[in-house]
Every structure is written in structure tokens, then in C-alpha cells.
Image (cartoon, rainbow, N blue to C red; front, side):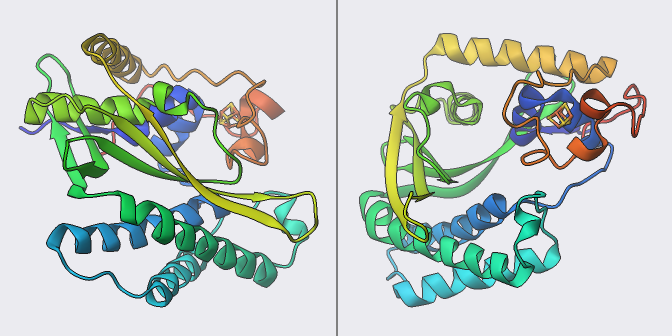
Length: 281
Ligand code: SF4
């Protein structure tokens, strides 16, 4: 009988806040925020471009690529978007238009700066890793592998990330685990390709640019990650889901869709025992 799958996104969410993960696994899905929608739209366009490069086909025109990004942003928005209280002060059609403009700005930089630099070997590769003794298989999707087996992950952000973000990324370590155990290859580099669109002090002015944060992973770091995953599985089995430290920036109404009803930050508004949660396939 196949084991249930534990996705990299579950491990990342659980590391961020156990309570978020508990509610997510219980089926309480919060629609994506604007940043996530803009990021997904850029991922779609990147997947299209990198697949074309992989096949040796010409890229679509920039205009067509931007059109794709605008369409995906609008379509995802139509399926439901989580807006913070601040964002709800702006009329929704205006917010939606701003999101489309932002997605297109980021896509233009992605096309002009990142795409010419990257020679893909595999795009959006789905991986499943069976680890002996683990109750779950590990699953995830590597955005992109380069010809030299380096792993790339694309991010979109509203401000430049800390310089050590690639050094500490759980996602990049998990993707390295997949490469190491499935392909028997240690990637020479792990990279975050980051598209940044930040507001400047002058109203209406933005700075949109791309940067790449590069790092490596060692066998010791992979061992540490396996230990972390084993610990995570044990917590899942026992129904232990620790809420995050309320000092963390993401533990707020602005960044956490569960905050308005979270018993750990506002008193008990909703409550459910976690002991019967199952991993999601
Ligand atoms: S409000 Fe804070 S503790 Fe509650 S689910 Fe969100 S991040 Fe976790």
C-alpha cells in the first residue's frame, strides 16, 4: 500500500507555524494573498519560457508573456483572494489592477534578466522520495535544474531578501535531498532567483529588479534535514502542532489568514483537537 505523501510545502508551513499547518490539514484553506497570486503568475510564465528553452524552441514575445501573466493573475484573483484589513481600505478593482501591473513588471524583469542566464536541464520536476522507516513519502516539485545540476527556485518579493536566505532555505535543502537520493547527484549550487518589486518613498514609484542568492548544501545539512523531517513526522503522528512565537512578523492579521480566529493570539474563537489529523496526499 502506498504511503501518504508529505509535501515540502507542509514542512515549510509547519516550520513557520504548527497551528497554521493544523488548520490547513484540517481543510481550512485560506485563499492566497496578492503576493502569492503574483508569484504563481510569474511561475507559470517562467515554466513556459524554461520549457521552451529546454526544447530549443523560441520564446514567446515579451508582450505575449506579459499577457499570460495578466490573465493568470486575473483568473486566480477571480477564484478568491485573501486581503488584509489595510488592503481592504482600497477598492478591489483598483487593487486588482495594481496586482496585475506588479505581476507584469516582475515578469518583464524576469524575462530580460533571469531567462537569458539560465540553461535548464529539467523544469517543474515532480519528485517523490521514499525513505526507509518514514511513515510518509516526501514529495515536492523542483522549479528548475540547470545543466550542471544546480537547483533554482524562483521567488517574488516586495523587498530584497536577507543575504543568507538561500543558505537557510528549507525548500532548497529538501530539493537537494531529492537530487541526492533520487539521482545520486549533489547539486553544485542551490539558488534563489528573486524578483523584487519594492515601493519607493516617492508615491507611485517602484524599484523592480532581479537578484540571485547562491549557496551550497553539505551531506551534514542533508542529515540534519532528515532528522528535522523525522521529528516533524513524529509530531504529526502525535497531533502536536506548536503555534509560532507571536513576535514573528507573519503572526499577524496582515500576513496570516487564520489570525482573526486564532485562539493563540486572540482568545478562543475556534478550537479543534488535532490528534486525528492525517497527512494530505
Ligand atoms: S495567528 Fe499566529 S499562531 Fe495563529 S495560525 Fe497564524 S501564525 Fe500561527
